[in-house]
Structure formats: C-alpha cells, structure tokens
Amino acid sequence: MKKEIPYKIYLEENELPKQWLNLRAFMKNKPAPLLDPVTMQPITLDALSNVFCTELAKQELDDTTPYIDVPQEIRDFYKMYRPAPLIRAYCLEKTLGTPAKIYYKFEGNNTSGSHKLNSAIAQAYYAKEQGLKGVTTETGAGQWGTALSMACSYFGLDCKVFMVKCSYEQKPFRREVMRTYGANVTPSPSTTTAVGRKILEEFPGTSGSLGCAISEAVETAANLDGYRYALGSVLNQVLLHQSVIGLESKTALDKYGVTPDIIIGCAGGGSNLGGLIAPFMAEQLQGKAHYQFIAVEPASCPTLTRGKYAYDYCDTGKVCPLSKMYTLGSGFIPAASHSGGLRYHGMTSTLSQLYDDGLMEARAVEQTKVFEAAEYFARVEGILPAPESSHAIRVAIDEAMKCKETGEEKTILFGLTGTGYFDMVAYEKFHDGKMNDYVPTDEELAKGLAGLPNVE
Image (cartoon, rainbow, N blue to C red; front, side, top):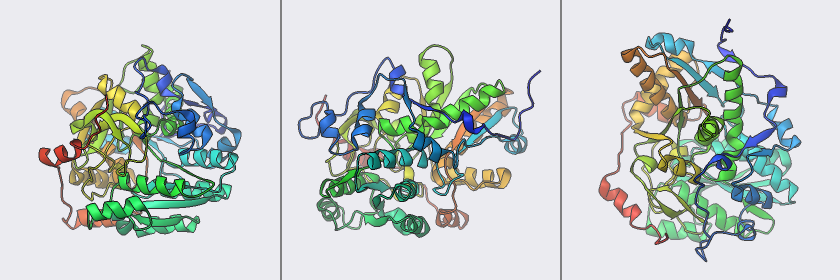
C-alpha cells in the first residue's frame, strides 16, 4: 500500500547528501573546455587558480569524477538549514482544478533567502583552507551576495561585492543584509575599477549587468594580495555544489515511490536548475529513466531561446575565461527587469551542452505573466516567491493547466529557490500597473552577438 504523501516531506539529518554529484561525469558529450582569454587555448589549472581557489579550480576542470565528497565542516553548516523541505502543492492543485500532482523544493528557509548558500559556504570554506584574506564577487538580485557575505562572516573572511546598479537601487534592504554580515557593497559599474570606468564611458547612465559586475570583481581580486574571485552561478563548480537540491529532492520522492514527469527551474546562469536536475539527468543519461526538463528564462534576456551557441567571454570586460555556451554576447546589457538574478548574457556550459543535445527544453516568459503567477502562488500556497523563482512557477502552472485540458495525471517538480521579501518594489509596480514587458528586438540582439570572439 502506498504511503500517504504529507504536505511537507522532510528528510532526516543523516540523509543529508555526503557527496555532491558531478553531472558532467555522466555526459557523453562533455562541455567544451574553458579557454584562456590571453592564449585562446584550453585554460590550465595554474591559470585558473589565479582567479579561483585552487581546490575550486580543480572542481571546475573535473569532468570525470561522478561524486565528490562534501567536507565535514560544510556538512555541519548545511545542517543549520538542510535538508530543505519538499512540498506537495495540494492547495495549488485544488485551486487550479488540475489532475496534475505538483511538488516544489523550497530553498528559501535560510537568511540568504535562496539556494545560493549551498555554494557560498563551499567557496568560502575552500578560501579559508587556502589561507586567503577574502573574496570578491558580483551579485544581481542580491541573493548570491547575501549568501557569500554570510559564508565569509562564518569563516572570518573579507567580502567585497559589486552589485548590479539597478538592483542596488531597487533593493536597498538586500544591500543592508550584506552589510550586516560585514560585506563591502559597491554599485556596478563603478568608478573604483578600470573596467567599470570604461563601461561607464561606453554606456553612460547604464543600469549595469551581471557581466559588468563580474569584470569589476575579477579585476579587484587580481589587484589585491590574498584574494580570489567567487561566482554564484554559471560555473561547473557551482552546479556541483547545488546538486544537493536535486539529491535531496530525489531521496524525498523515492521515499514515497513518486517519479516526476516534468522538472522545471528558472534559468539565469543555470545554478539552481543544474542543481535540481542533476540526479534525474544523470539517470536519463544512463538510460535508466526519462524526464521532461524545462528551463525558464525572462523574455528580456532570452539566452537559450534566442541566443547563439558559441564561445564567448563570461564577462563584459573580457577579462574572464571564455566558455562555449548559449549567449547573447558579453556586451549585451539586458533591460532593468525585476528578476536581477536572471539578467546574465550566457548560460552555463553544462546546461548549454545538454540543451544543444536536445535533452532540455527552454521557455521565455514576460515579467507581468511571471508576477501574475507569483501573486497567485502567494495567495494559494502562502509563500511569497522571488521574481526569479516565479518563472518556474509560471511554467509549472501552465503545465498543470495543460493536464487539466487533457486529463493527464502528470507529476510536476519545480524549484522554488528564493523568497521575495526584498522584492516589494517590484510587487508594488506590478500591483500599480506600472510594470512593463520588455522583449529585445532581433536588431538589438544582433548588436550583442556581433561582438562574439572569432573562436571555433
């Protein structure tokens, strides 16, 4: 007899994953290697270690080890807020009148308000182990910056954050949480770096982008002795750390004999989506199961749905390694939408390869439709979602309504990776009817793509 499925499925502390899952090890078509921006050859460990902590650089280049041990000190920190609950959205199912069964993995039950802490604590741990003084980083909506600030505070490290200017202005309270944890927060682009001054000269009055902020953070780390750069998405090492999301989700579902048909995540740089799908995609790559994977991105920054699969710089200032990915061009600066964490010009090389191989789908949605879904979800399920996560909610509702039309009893799993308590300016604009949907024209996208480097 099947167990009755509770509203919230909690794992025991001893069920917390002891290893991260390295999805690249299961891929027949491996992501293309990172290229050194100077030599345009595959980057070496030594060169990458000048940017990142040495152990993180090793993880970044490792595409053969299927599982990597989680250090005990990181596991002990995880225990403060993990395992995170997997929630059956009974109320949402009932209100929609759908035969679909809907589950969401809730990653907002920590002070950072999102899944970002899963990688932040790992990156801070390795920085401390290496004897560094501190780290630099960028942040869009502020969730990554908050998480890294928390992690650095825990290990006694200095943390310098370059926050995308539009988010710095829209979300002052997120900025203050970072400062509470001791971080120095600078709006980007700024006049404190050479690359920031160059971008301001080229794009006067710009609202900034993640690509700009990354360039400033990398330059700052390079000029400070005892510092390295830390990135909250896009990198393979980050997807590795975020695999705890999917591993916990799969363990919880397996307990009740549940197999999802559709797995949905919002997609900016790819960290939460990559983490959520990791064990499920690994199964599919081994021929053990089949799932429908859907990446949801903003229509204002349509990387997968309208971008090009090519080598590109990971940052606007062109100082970072080049990655083969779906991209809109490192010079593309998205509109100042309220989903700051999804305003990145490229997609992680791992998910880009999977998408190019036809193993994933992608949908682009307008922000007013996203906030319609966010408000609906908040009223029904009682959680105020972040704008980024609400992209996944939008498509989960759309898929559930398709089931209502067809009568199919599909099981849907999506990632609710953040809370929206620092996003009330965005909610206010939505409620006041002042929110606009911006979709770039083909001509605007062509300008960004015209700047792609000539690399095969």
